[in-house]
Every structure is written in C-alpha cells, then in structure tokens.
Length: 152
Image (cartoon, rainbow, N blue to C red; front, side):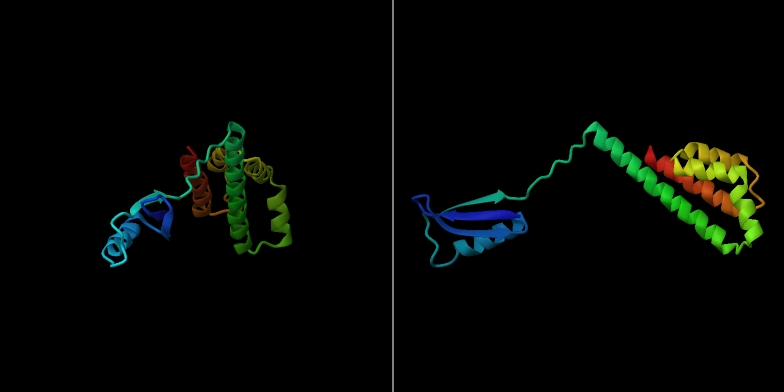
C-alpha cells in the first residue's frame, strides 16, 4: 500500500490518497498535476505503507515447527496405509493377523514416533508380502524417502 500526500506551500495537507502500487500512485499524480486546480506550490510525497513482517523464529519455535511438520507427515502416512488396508477388504482373521504382526507393530510405532529413517529401513528390509504388494511397499518407502529428502 502506497500513500500519496499532497501538501500546500505552508506544509498543510491538501490531499491524501492510497494506492496498491507505486506505479498507480505516479500515474494518478501525473494526471492531477495537469488539472486546472493544481497549484505549482504543491509538493507531493509517496511513502510505502506496506508493513514488512519479519518472521524470526526462536530456536525453540523452529524445533516446534519441525516437529509439527513431522507429525503432520506421520498422519498423512497413516492415512495412506489405512487407505491401502481398507482396499484389501480383510476379514476379521486377516485383520487380527495384520495387527498382531510384530513387524507391522514396529513400523506403526516408528511412524507414530516420527522415526521415519528407521520406519523406511524396516519397510525396505522386511517381507511384507503377506499384507502388501511390491508396488504398495515401494509406494510407502518412496513416500517416506521423498519426505526425508524434502526435510533436509
């Protein structure tokens, strides 16, 4: 936001106008100067009234933001796993086997604890073929890998 002030020769304000850009202010002023009521003794000033917000995070706030982002990704990953699992239409016995599998429990715990490097390693190293296709395992591993690359 730009503020244009036009003052009389005694320094009293004659007119104040606001514009979205410096160019708009200059165009408007150049038109006003041509008008018959314009007094040669007028002076004009254009000031940038845009508030510049400087965002400085404390070290603790920065850490907090990182952890919030990690937990947000953890939730996104859990949703992806839930969608894959739901598409399988597992019966009660299959669901119980899935939920009691120690590797699945470990993966879920690592994701919940935002230990993504360990979760990815466990997904990559484990035989999850009882529950997931190779494509699904690759998709989950890639999702974590992509996040880890972005986070750096």
